[in-house]
Amino acid sequence: MAKKTAYPFKKLVNLTEQQAERIADYRFANRISSENEAIRQLIEYGLRVVEAEGADQS
Image (cartoon, rainbow, N blue to C red; front, top):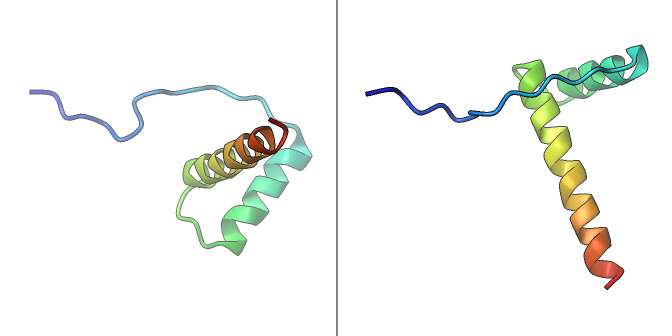
């Protein structure tokens, strides 16, 4: 039986040099073990902000 992965979807994203540096800075400032995890956290944070803003505009 195949083991289920925690993150079954993979996406390829192109970044500017500044975006990559900002992600690296966030990762190290928050002691995050991997760049992928830092990116997941930033995406989740951004989605929550957008959802909250959308609720405010209703």
